[in-house]
Length: 256
Image 1 (cartoon, helix red, strand yellow):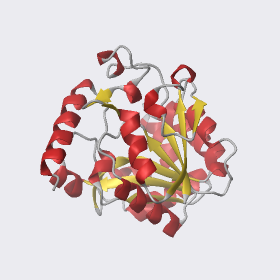
Image 2 (cartoon, helix red, strand yellow):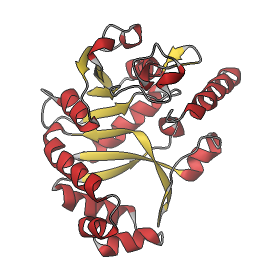
Image 3 (cartoon, one colour):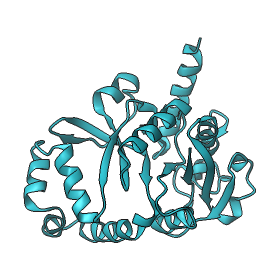
């Protein structure tokens, strides 16, 4: 069993402004239940999670949506600060599940599966991916940004697995990537021209991407492909609220 860190920090955005009483997006109610509470319910039902740490605005720590958390910690201005706060004090070599907080249909079985896959390969950093055909077969109405690789087309999911000792290297990489994201020359310097060229034409393999990421981070990095599309259903835009509510209603109606 492992620790889960749920990132529920940040200021109000357009999603949060649909419900003025919500401290931020994580606390927006979808079908009557706050997004972060839906996430926590699934984590608490998982057989792989021993402890849940939520990172949220300090003023929200008494919110009833966080009642299932074992511990609440303050967030930061940037996500990397919130992640550092969530991982602080955890065993450096323990594989920790880091979860988004806006996963309205998350299930315990999808959490169990991800943790088991992560523990089986034991990366320093594991990034969840969901294959497009798997996702669109279940939830074609949910939009995503897709990455076309040689073995298939993928989107990111709501989880990463990380060993806390890798955080400084990850933070440095995120800062480099953020500074270079609008400059193709700088991106080429980071990832390599050959890697970017292969990605552009859909010929980059997952193995090559993992190898490049591992070299950049100085730590083993792996993609973890989940067969559970619900892990990639989140609420990023105001229009996603209605989509999530419709999916929840459909799942309730389809339940035996």
